[in-house]
Image 1: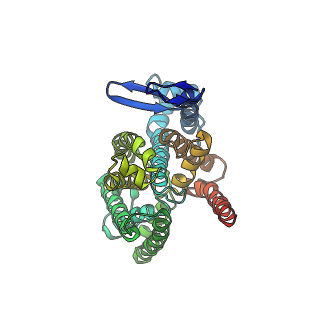
Image 2: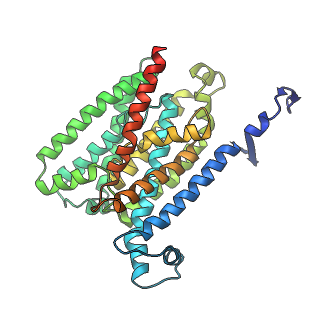
Image 3: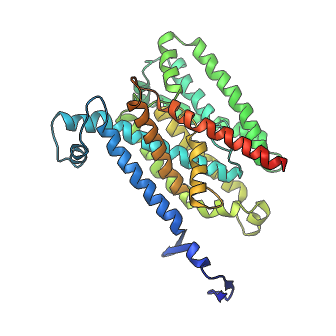
Length: 365
């Protein structure tokens, strides 16, 4: 044992497991393993961006793609890269990033791997709002036209906020218990899904077709008009989420400990919920409810990092990798284009079943 700066005993090697960087009054703790995993995931995401732009009905070599991205290429290939394919690929990366961060926040907040926006009703609320904008808006049935008009983002955000408020209110009993929140969220999600089905039944055939395609989670109609609002939300909300990392770690120790160290629990919880809702609503507005990203990615990041909660930055990078990889598979592995939400659901549903079976075995011991 060797003494630290405060005179406490520190085991050899303990300091190397968690290191820190201080910039003025701001301190940032990081683990070398998490840092290395994050850099690796970012590199994979960048490679998938290049491949996603290169692969399509017309093959474009990675060299041409990179030169086009740097503004060194002109002609038809550059037009395909920058106008037709790049918006879809970048939007997919941001959708994965925002959903993964939202899932990491809610799973940490509830201390439950099932506490994700998909399960606790946030995604269903955003879907109801967006479908209502399509069906009841009285305008064009085109999703891109509605995005340009700002209808879907606003409606999805309102729907997600209302759903989160209902779940949080019904789950409150002198505090929030994770399993109660999950159970209430499942019930609210079922109710909201029924409302979505009712809206689709009432819709005209063209509106119902457009909304149904969007509801499975699709990047096929994305454009720069869908990318920029999502980028703005991510640029604001993700840094705020990273700033809450220390408070999230304290919250893992329990309410009594958090209160004892001076953490405002209710204010912190409301901030985390608001961030998760805004991130989820922005992703749903851009590409529809891409399933299981918010559920699977934080758990994978947790196991790769070996930490006691999902790392936010690693989750963000892995979320981009999952959606980019799923979209690339959906576009290249089938004779027709498959919505990316179907691929992520096929990947995530077995993982959910495995997690439930594992939890049941642990509870029976």
